[in-house]
Image 1 (tube, rainbow, N blue to C red):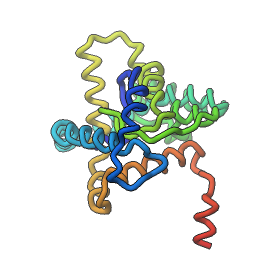
Image 2 (spheres, rainbow, N blue to C red):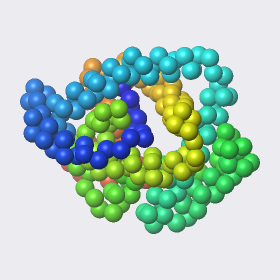
Image 3 (cartoon, rainbow, N blue to C red):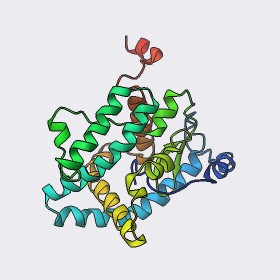
Image 4 (cartoon, one colour):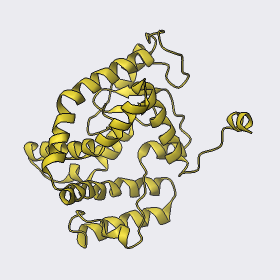
Length: 246
């Protein structure tokens, strides 16, 4: 499944490969103008889902079963605190200066009073958590969304969102710039992935209950969420849909 699991890997030559494979997309599925590479994407979805069900999901269930809830919250807060660094930079790049200073303030408060981010003190002080990434920054700069694509290991994305992986989760990730051994770095990444996957267990059950085509459901949920985030919670109204409902 690996919903929204876009994490630390470089994708240098993937774009060219996708352009070639896109022309070979299967025609057995309903056409979707935002998903022209559906045959390839469904194959990648199945690949990711197989790995997830065999490895990540069982580990996440074990983690959830043996880890006390307060510790789970602390671990989630720790990685969210690190994310605020890239969020602040992207707010700067988008011209949202006040939000950027708030993001950097959150990092300062949570890294000190929040004990390295394990406690989200900043939120209790009225410093709101934002959600920005380089994909949203590219959208603000006018870059077109491009086709939907399912990346191996990372899951749902678009051609515009794909660069956010090396930018947000490598270049702007504070852990990248801390001197760690290979084993230590892998351990940090593993904890991050397992913690995130554990948070998605309940959501996955809901998806399975209400959807007969998980791939299509996840695609539409991802694209709608991205549109929501890019427009800061107020996406433009679809005039055609509005007229149909009127």
